[in-house]
Every structure is written in C-alpha cells, then in structure tokens.
Length: 160
Image 1 (tube, rainbow, N blue to C red):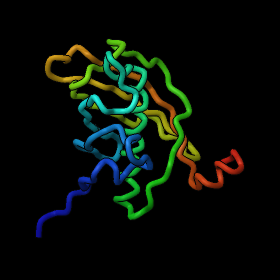
Image 2: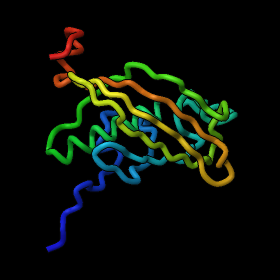
Image 3: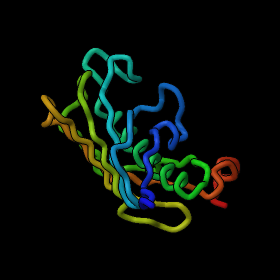
C-alpha cells in the first residue's frame, strides 16, 4: 500500500474564505506545515487592473491570500472547516516595480516565522515573477490573527 501524501493537493478556492473574483491566485504549487507556494498569472480581467497592469500594492493581498491558503490547507488536512483570518499589519512591504504587467506569472511564497499565542502569527512573504519579468519581486513580513471563533471575535472584538 502506498503512503498517503501528508500534504494533499487542494484547489486554491477550496482552502480560502474568499469567493468569486476576489480569489486572486490560481493554484497551490506545494505546501508543508510551515510554508506554501502559490501561483497566479495576471490577467486583463483581474480585479484592480488598470492600463499599466496590477498595482504592486495588491501584492500584499496576494501574500495574505497565500497565508490564508496555508491555514486552509492545515484545516482541511485536519478535517476542520476553513476559517477566516485577519491581516493585522505588515512590515517593510517593498516592490521592485510599481505594477505587475498583464501576462506576468507570479509565484508567492509564505513561511510562518513566528507562531504566537491566541492565533497571532508572523509570516515572511516573497513574490517573484518569471520569464520576461524575472526582475519583478516584492517582499514583506505580514502579521495575521486567526481567532478560534471568528464570529465571536467579530461581535465582541476580543478573542474567545
């Protein structure tokens, strides 16, 4: 009998709480307990696109959705529901370019570097383009909060 993959493949939309056009990434390339890599091709009909492409500030949302996907993969593997989380803040978000041109293929990597108490975590995030845009990159440290009971948190503003 073959060993079961400890990190099964999931469709991106199945592991994030986003829906419809707000699912900005295309797929999960690979993941493990601490990190995940996702990919996207910037399309002309994507949200936030203008004549120059996708503004680089959207990169922080690409990173946040990649973090959400890691949380969702962990939840699915543990037979738990996918829960919402909150981007608390970021440090040192930098981008080598002001826009991600249409047609650019991006890889977004996130790695959990601090696992705090009560659902607080810090992730080291990078975004890199391939092909003709291989000089395009972005990076940040992102602080997130995933409460045990998101609905209770939204109502009271305090963790359960």
